[in-house]
Length: 506
Ligand SMILES: *[C@@H]1O[C@H](CO)[C@@H](O)[C@H](O)[C@H]1NC(C)=O
Ligand SMILES: *[C@@H]1O[C@H](CO)[C@@H](O)[C@H](O)[C@H]1NC(C)=O
Ligand SMILES: *[C@@H]1O[C@H](CO)[C@@H](O)[C@H](O)[C@H]1NC(C)=O
Ligand SMILES: *[C@@H]1O[C@H](CO)[C@@H](O)[C@H](O)[C@H]1NC(C)=O
Ligand SMILES: *[C@@H]1O[C@H](CO)[C@@H](O)[C@H](O)[C@H]1NC(C)=O
Ligand SMILES: *[C@@H]1O[C@H](CO)[C@@H](O)[C@H](O)[C@H]1NC(C)=O
Ligand SMILES: *[C@@H]1O[C@H](CO)[C@@H](O)[C@H](O)[C@H]1NC(C)=O
Ligand SMILES: *[C@@H]1O[C@H](CO)[C@@H](O)[C@H](O)[C@H]1NC(C)=O
Image 1 (cartoon, rainbow, N blue to C red):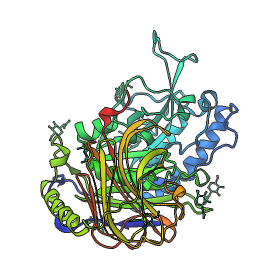
Image 2: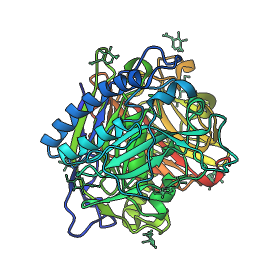
Image 3: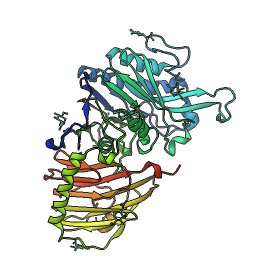
Image 4: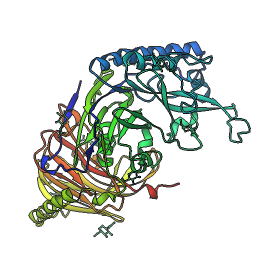
């Protein structure tokens, strides 16, 4: 079982662009990665009481974990998406698992004080868990709502089915409901996409939180509006995220997003080891880098895991152009970049570029076979440069640039620079997932001239044969990652994923 804290920041670079909220103490957050119990047959319609049996088994585990979290002073706990029944349904087989979930803004309801004359066992259980342990509780469940009269887009079965996040206050009050807006392909066969996006936030004594789930994090709505227009810096994020190395494993992308967006992200993932669902954590920005408490466990026989740690609420003066937000750090990093460029300028890697596929995208890449060097690769309008020093010559690495539409599992416009470990020493294996590396980085500077304004930096290594977020010093600013001290883990990925949401297909 892996759980570790990381520190990745240069203290002198810390400045005041992240302002602690006056009179607000830090808070203790918890996420539970849950090894969900789900029926083997999800294609046969079951009765409500059979469905409830499955959900109560999972809720019993939630109860035990809420208890442990509370004993460790957690004030808010997040459970994963699909944590009550697993994935892989049809519209009809999903139905017995759903409950009518009223609008909490329309009328205050405390399911634990008073249950309703409709199926609301799950809501009652969740509300009572929050109340018993006196903490904010965030969970994901299924909602069914009748179509309003005269609704012309009403489905044939006269009801809507929504993938829903629910939030309860420490007294059990139901305070927020969010219908997932960005469904993945599979989900369309059992859930409806809400007609309009709903921005869902709630306030606590320790800050304002917003919630969305899973692949919402890849899209503009509701994510960017909540963070950049409504200035919310705490996000509770139930998810069911399948590992996609080398660039999109859960701990890797979720931490990168927290750093790029300057938010505290509380990400609870589902644990289904055999299907690649794992990796949960609390991720918080430190100014120019990221700190985190997380778990990553793909071992045979692995199960759920609770992560608890302290986070600091903060506000950011947003609305300023992203690139100029960190003027002082930016200048320091630029000076460093220029000196690096001089230092490495006579070691240009002249290897012929080739197309390699990473997470389904064709990157223009060169192979890295020397211990130190400098190389630039370009695709369309993006040029990526890397200067590196380490132990690479015995193992094959590739460095690539991508500028285009990602279409493999979801569709969005991506620009990326990526330095990755190839799966073995044949060029054909570059881009394929690997959890094996024996080479380290002493120093690296990576830079891309992204036109995409939102940039998410990733540094992933292997420690004890498992992917790990980096524990040493590196920092990120305006299109650049600088690794200034040797990494103790073996390196599998250094990359920057950049997004220009305006260029996404509508
Ligand atoms: C990172 O988090 C740990 C606690 O989880 C804390 O002790 C440490 O000071 C943090 N580091 C920075 C640079 O914020
Ligand atoms: C969005 O959420 C608010 C608050 O819960 C609610 O009043 C409103 O009806 C919701 N809108 C839709 C379209 O679901
Ligand atoms: C439910 O009971 C708690 C006390 O146990 C109280 O604080 C809360 O206001 C009640 N909520 C409703 C909606 O009645
Ligand atoms: C978000 O922050 C910006 C800049 O500080 C401010 O102009 C804007 O009014 C804020 N928006 C909200 C909803 O607080
Ligand atoms: C996780 O769930 C699977 C499937 O239900 C089960 O076989 C396994 O024993 C569970 N692991 C743990 C550690 O509970
Ligand atoms: C270019 O690649 C070849 C193997 O394909 C390798 O032998 C050579 O050292 C590489 N050159 C550089 C500068 O990386
Ligand atoms: C390297 O990986 C490729 C692609 O997965 C595979 O076809 C090849 O057999 C592997 N080569 C070695 C030497 O393991
Ligand atoms: C990035 O650099 C290349 C090469 O100098 C240039 O052709 C391209 O226009 C630049 N892209 C942007 C967005 O500035």
